[in-house]
Image (cartoon, rainbow, N blue to C red; front, side):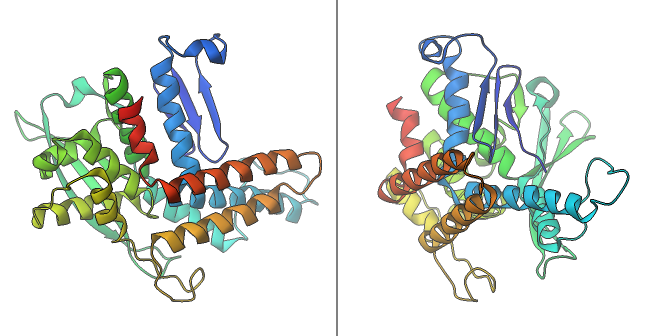
Length: 324
């Protein structure tokens, strides 16, 4: 399970653990108006993505389920003389299935420098993957890079949530500070996809940021990003405003699950509420001890406040790019 988003050498954020690390000895208050501020904002965007999107909430549920399953696997083998590490989950099929699905949703986590892809072009397509633990094929967005000079294959890259999370954070950081990075993947790939498939849409950076943000309100962000970009290109759709784009994208989110919705189709607001309720339930299951209960109360308070802000101001994260 991939669980670290890193701005190379200067900081990182650990999803579901709500932990930001900045490589500095400076006090927090001194990071503002310093060389550390762009990194701080970048990692803080990851925190907001984590606590205010359906993808982030669902990932938190899966992480808690994974932690509980690890504990129970050890408990089931408590009479064993030796416990092998890493601990393998074999007795909890729902955790195995969700981990497998989210590995597909997350996509590649490689960091590839700009120089390596300077003279490259790419082809992008959607693949349907059969998952033995899941009743329906799962979409994976695959990008293949080739050398412009001789068409030789350079690398394959799976465009998923990691690329979308990092691209969105980088674009917001870039909008505020004019930042550039030597790494092309994963930070610049969303912008490159838009520039190649629908350049008119990408002329306004906020459109790409919003497409990233809206994609995180879906369980498979890469699939949502790619298919909706193509749909907007076919329809020659260009938004009249940021809110128009959010409305256009989010109204397309329909979700059906025998387990979560009783086979009833729900919209993104309903799915957000379902994801939020499940996250609160999982947090309460994990933090049962009174000693650590304040941690649970803090997390739940953050999630509640984030949901209130998101539901009353759907574009609050994207606004950061232009309000500073």
